[in-house]
Image 1: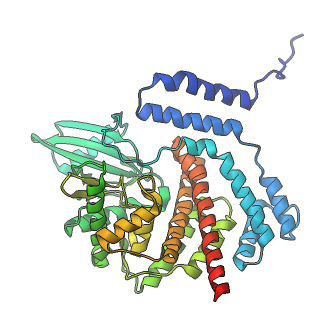
Image 2 (image 1 turned 90 degrees about the vertical axis):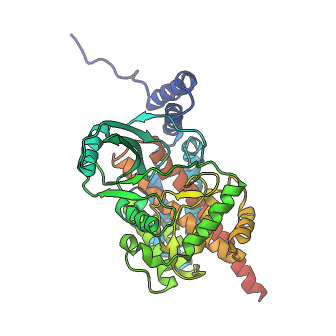
Image 3 (image 1 turned 180 degrees about the vertical axis):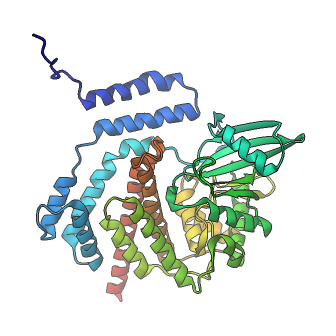
Length: 455
């Protein structure tokens, strides 16, 4: 009599992931040339190591532990527990609860370490990236023929590797014997809580006011064309590679951006806030809303940080146009001048201190430390802040990063994108920002308490 084959010897998930990880590291990675394919394989190696090493889901255990600290029924679901925990932290009298949440943060950060090690950042490079074929080429060609009003004689489309907020295509199109070099920026499901149309309108307005932003040709809101809304801009010549001379020129140009009348970008950003404090409050609320739309449950440490920022963060000057992601990798130059500020998806009305602290404390920290950047900003743009103000705006940027990066986990979780980097951004990079945010606020709060005691 035939019987059902035994499944006792079915390999475990750990064994399967070990197979994937070992094959990637010992067979596939050594066979690939440096570039897009090797980077992708390296990222997949990190995903395999993460899957292999992470412990079982501890949500139920944590819910029970936190419920006990909050005097809630043991069977209370984790989202409700975290809502109550958030309220307790914001009230300011929950040291034991906070210590437990910090312990969880440390555990989660260590768990995600394999992803952080393989995350692909945005270091500027002088070399041209690998050419990667774009599956959107045929549909884009039809759309461009209609937009240009002419038959296309030659079309080259390739994926530009490196961006996270937008999928970018490099396009060369020839009509009537004239070649035009363009860049297409395609939304990726609201990555980082941003949209392409406001970004494009800001760039168009700045370009028309003689600020070095790539000129925008067309804005397409219909997602049926390429699967997401997109816009098309001229490809501006220039290199992202940096040296001291180009960095100094960029610093001066960034200062010029902050001196522009902010109303010039009203077509993209809407009315200018009535007062500087309004723009500060709007920025905090915006990023808190981005995190809340992306997370499946409240994050008490982020709720506490938002409350701290509302109580402590103050404007340092008038409302201005803030780039939001300034520094190396997000501008081009031709050796003599800055030819373009790129990546405007974070542009908004705000305070210039946001740009300077993000540049010096986060984006360009691999080049020199914040102290060195602060000296450069003072020398090249006459911009300086006291330590407390710098620390508070650095905390804001860490908050912004922790909130924005959760959007990547939402897109990965919902299947909008399966890119390994989105998993890394939404877990490991988010947790790194959150950990640094908590530490920074702790340092600033301790310093303030010491000052009050000495007074």
